[in-house]
Length: 228
Ligand code: ADP
Ligand code: ADP
Image (cartoon, rainbow, N blue to C red; front, top):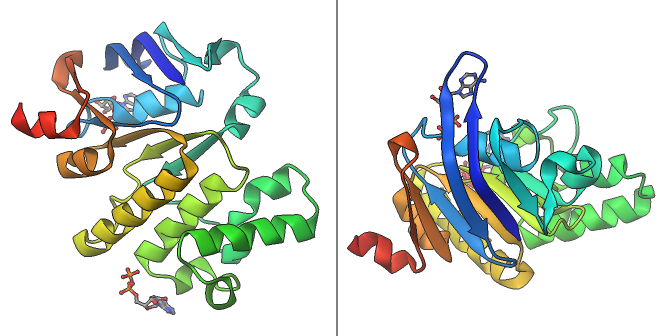
């Protein structure tokens, strides 16, 4: 479970990116944090995996303060999916998905089998796609590879930053549906941020709406957001 308690972030130039944010993501739930561009969503996710240090408040992951955790161990338990998935252009799709297993020194055969299993899971038939290079994929397919890569070491937590934002609306809808099916099966603890209210309502078990100035409204059922 992820808990943010009165979290704030002021950047060195004085920008108050996040102010007094309190939020929790129960184990196995998908909380969608939605708000306009610039309201601090990416900053929030980066504080959870400790790419950025909060200036106030604290963040707990399964009860442990992330600022006191070993960053390598912390990130091993967290899959991170961003909008423009930074796939390595000179590595095949399979090698890209196996990035984390390779860092963890899994043997080649096991890493390869895991990568192929995940490609299958995200709808990319390994015999057709595993040996391709990122430039040989469509935008939607690259995004799927990004999701597969984030899942490779089976982290209990997923942080998703506009994961389906870079593709056209039709592909986006398909990826959202596929991700929902996947999440149903995997039951990860997910904090997803998006500026797209429809995406938040479609994917979130719970939706938190972040307005400018740090005002946060939380809705236990997505339908309640639309009624508000
Ligand atoms: P969102 O993800 O909701 O679009 P961000 O978290 O990226 O918002 O940014 C929140 C605010 O912090 C914005 O005003 C942005 O310009 C500012 N910001 C983001 N990164 C930095 C940085 N490294 N230094 C200074 N200001 C930043
Ligand atoms: P999607 O609906 O997933 O975004 P696209 O319409 O972009 O798919 O692409 C359609 C098909 O064309 C995909 O099966 C993809 O593999 C293939 N494709 C796209 N770009 C390339 C490329 N540069 N080289 C080879 N095949 C490509």
